[in-house]
Length: 359
Ligand SMILES: Nc1nc2c(ncn2[C@@H]2O[C@H](COP(=O)(O)OP(=O)(O)OP(=O)(O)O)[C@@H](O)[C@H]2O)c(=O)[nH]1
Ligand SMILES: [Mg+2]
Image 1 (cartoon, rainbow, N blue to C red):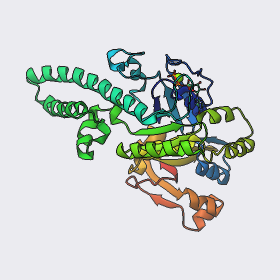
Image 2 (cartoon, rainbow, N blue to C red):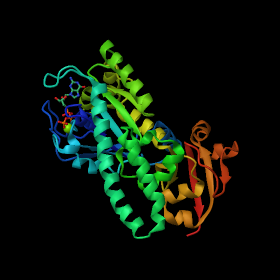
Image 3 (spheres, rainbow, N blue to C red):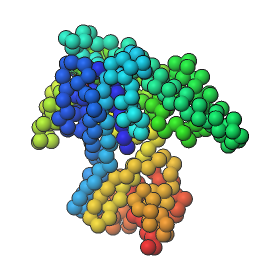
Image 4 (cartoon, rainbow, N blue to C red):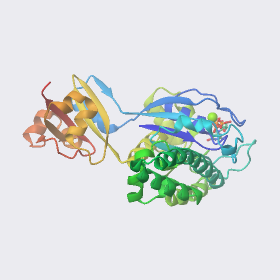
């Protein structure tokens, strides 16, 4: 899973990036502090995985990860070269989700927070950036169609439709599912085709002002089929420095933080991207894997190793909670909770799977 962090300058993007990954990238109150992208990894702290690992007596736990890419700030006119322009967006074209960071705190250099205005500015710049890409591709496809390439007509039509959609200032993720299916073949590098998460970065999540602003952001997120999260990124960034987990959690609660943003981002990013998790225990190593919702046992095997998919015989499946409640694999088996499934079995979120295969 990869996520791109975007927003206007001084939205607190790098602060959020540090809070999510534990990095120490530079942040300050002057615009365009970030020029080159910051890249970092966060482990997804999935409690289910840790509980399974305990029951399985695993010596090592390998959580799934999210790679975060924090880029420069976008300002109005970026598509025409204002500020740092929009070419740096290429750094987040390959990601799975966009984390829109919105300033919800007062800053002397910027004034009172205006998150909805900032969000609209960024959305419009995303749309203009996608339009540039579509137009370039359209030129190429038109040439090929003129040269008699009939296979390209479907793509040409889809591109024309996407262009018209973007020209009416609507992001591509608002396209109907059916149309989207047709187009997503070549939509991977279009930013407005990716699911979005709006993160309102505030000083104090419990204040009336924060709640008021978050209400506006939730409405915006609803219009955009996106998720809305409230984050005290600066406080979380500072809390990252505290090594003792219990102490960190207690302090977080005293600041009104009930859940760390990284966890909420992971949950929402999986949900919006249609991903689930399954777990494996091999050679004393308990591991979480991401998988498309609706994928089969053989697809899951392929995530682990291509050989496992090629030589797939069967999958031994136990739901994580059944395994944890049983206290051991042996008891879970006695209780009839460990099932033998074939290649076409649809994997559930939280399944613990052992693959049997010929090599
Ligand atoms: N009071 C307060 N200040 C914050 C918070 N989050 C970030 N800041 C401050 O806002 C300023 C900008 O933060 P950055 O994280 O550098 O913002 P950015 O969006 O990465 O900025 P650019 O890289 O310049 O686009 C810094 O002075 C941060 O300390 C917050 O939650 N509360
Ligand atoms: Mg920055």
